Image 1: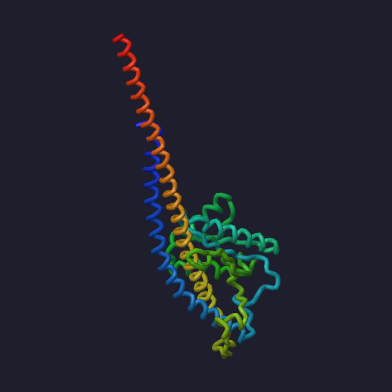
Image 2 (image 1 turned 135 degrees about the vertical axis):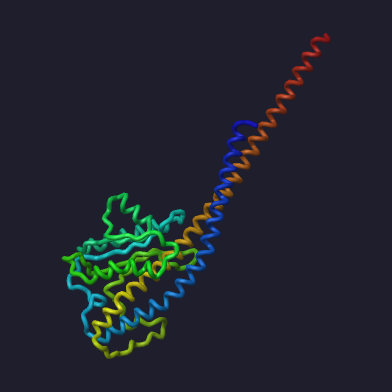
Amino acid sequence: MGAQLRVYKRRIKSVTATKKITKAMEMISASRIVKAQRKVAASTPYATELTRAVTAVATGSNTKHPLTTEADNPTRAAVLLLTSDRGLAGGYSSNAIKTAAKLTERLRGEGKAVDTYIVGRKGVAYYSFREMAIADSWTGFTDNPSYADAKNIAAPLIEAIGKDTAEGGVDEIHIVFTEFVSMLTQTPVDDRLLPLSLSEAEAGEGAKAELLPLFEFEPSAEDVLDALLPRYVESRIYNALLQAAASEHASRRKAMKSATDNAGELINTYTRLANQARQAEITQEISEIVGGASALADATAGSDY
């Protein structure tokens, strides 16, 4: 076997092994998307109704609260960025990081200092490599987050919104995550969590949005908002984590399918090249045999003469 043919066969073997791995990862991600979608569907109604309840309390009273009242001159904002712990998911993490960078640039253009909180090893690695400040970070659960993870993330953010900016507090909380639109479409978005800015018309779902009910509060509306604040932030973060997890699995499935298809095309290319190399070797061997036979025949004829 010629040297060139051996090279092609080694490459075919290597690419075939890679194709098996990418195909397995594609199938695993495809199976996990369904579970992630179910979790998103289960968490969304709770987050929607809780937002509606908070809006009802806020619009039904004139209480000034960090949950609903914007600062007269906001000077500091927190940005929570959701990325993945693992790679091989196409542009999932990089697109979220770019969206966070645009948001940070816009906030700084408005004269606000920005504290960045990051979920996922990819985001942490990106910021650490560039020596960019990170207020806090969490890793190890991006592909399967729990409500306990959302509570851990929400705790320092809730503490920051309740402090004065001179003491390390913030006036606004923004979140950047990848919204799961469909199996083929995942869109990085930025959303402001606090202060809450929903109107009564936006609080309802669909065309039949109803006016929010009026309530009487005991002991006070402020106490109700204090109780709802952590629940609201936790539920919104949890829903964003689930959306991001579903988007991560969908992006990885799409990336692995593309890698599997490319590996198949590469195997076909190397197979054709190997066949051509083998045919060239056979042709050369036949030519050598024919040439040797002809030379032998000429030598025999000369000796007879």
